[in-house]
Structure formats: structure tokens, C-alpha cells
Amino acid sequence: MIRMDTNTPANGPGHTHPGSTLSEMDLRVRALETLLVQKGYIDPAALDVLIETYETRIGPHNGARVVARAWTDPAYRRWLLEDATAAIGSAEGFGFSGRQGEHMVAVENTPDVHNVVVCTLCSCYPWPVLGLPPVWYKSAPYRSRVVIDPRGVIAEFGVQLPASTQIRVWDSTAEIRYLVIPMRPAGTDGWSEAQLARLVTRDSMIGTGLALSPDALAAA
Ligand code: FE
Image (cartoon, rainbow, N blue to C red; front, side, top):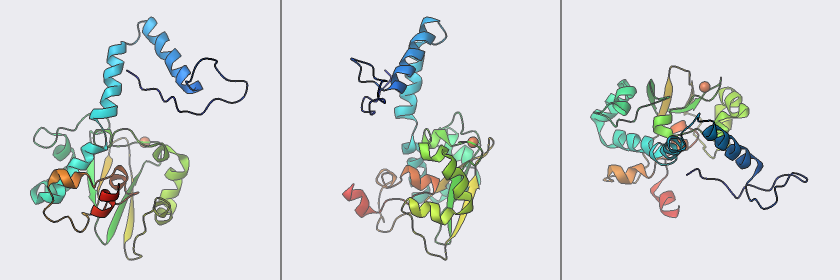
């Protein structure tokens, strides 16, 4: 079932739909779906599977598992840095493959280097590990400004780095999608892969965030 956001603010004056709590956009989407189904162009069951897939099966929790394994398994970390496509997508890896994940490259944050990912041309994004991109990732201001002033842009996301940390910006292309491996937070010695994965946020894998500290996780 398509999830409709019924909390969307009402439409502008003179543009309300009596008896409906759906927004203008929701109504348009629903009308379009109805039309496509009636014309036989789409199968509603197939559409539901697609939406369900991107809502639950594919998302940043996949990338978080990859990062947590890299933090705990040195052999896996080496494989990920050498051949992320295989380490993430192959059956011996995680099997997270599919559209926009055909050619993956993992870049690792260290005290000396912090990596940030953008697609300056459009919105290329590693879907199999991060799901669908957030709105800001696709926005023109992010795409243009992060290249010119990465330190300023990530500061707006709340990330303050020492001046000695170099920031590298990676521009995604139709061929290559990047995944940032954030630094493992302090105070996590002995944590299991599953525990560690909970510290890995979507933004930390784009480079606009850091992995959560154990305290931040406890407070969340
Ligand atoms: Fe793109």
C-alpha cells in the first residue's frame, strides 16, 4: 500500500479539496496511479513491492551493516577499500546490489582526511546501501556549495572538524557511487557488529555527519 502523508499542510487558499485530508501532491500521485492502473500500464501489486522495497528492504541500515563490519573485520575492511562493488554486492559480501550500485567505491575517514560525497550534475547516489537520497542531497545549493566550501557546508550539518583535517569531496558520476566509511567512535571497544551498526547514520556515510557516539545513541 502506498503510504500517503496526510500531515502535509493544506493547500493554498482557493485550492482545497473538501472532504479530503490529502495534499495536492498526494491527490495528483493517486490520480496518476489510478489512471496508469486503469490503462493497464502498471500492476498495482508490482508497484507495492517496489515501494515496500525502498521503504523497508533498501535503506541506510544496509550501509550501516557494511561500515560496522569494516570496523570489526580488518580483512573485510581491506576488501571494501579495494573492491567495494564486490564487498558490498557479491553473495560472499552482503549481496546489496541493484540499480545505482553497480560500481561502488568506499572512502575511509581518518583523523587526517574527511570525505564528503556529492553529485554535482544531478543526484547519483548509492541506492543499495543508502536507499533513496534525501531532498537536500538533490538540491542545487548543496550540489554547488559543497564543492566550493565543504567545511562550511558540513558545519551547517553540525560537523566541526579540526583545521588539520583535510576535506575531500567526491563527485559521483553515472559510473561511480561513493560510500563514506566514518571513523569508529571512541568508547566502542568490544561492541558487536550489530551494536556498532546502530551508530552509523545515513549522513555519516555521505560525509555530512559523523557516526554517533555511544552517549548520543543512548540519548536518542
Ligand atoms: Fe547524478
